Image (cartoon, helix red, strand yellow):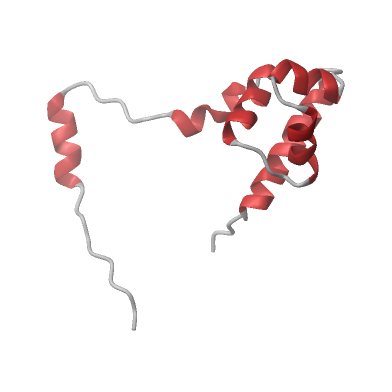
Length: 101
């Protein structure tokens, strides 16, 4: 059984990841949020309430040179020809999902 994290838990993981890296790079919180273009309030909300925009998370990761951490999210399949795309499309079978009553 796959265990899923809540959005709050995912944001908490981001907070921990970013804070560990900030400390490893010997940066003060103020240095990080200013270099990232965030306000002190936005950074405080990120730390305490685990809320911020996706853009702010990207800014923090970029400032800490951690953009490699999100490359997996941005990968798309690469095809070498139109025939390869057609073959993949033929293999894809769409199925209807029915709700149990």
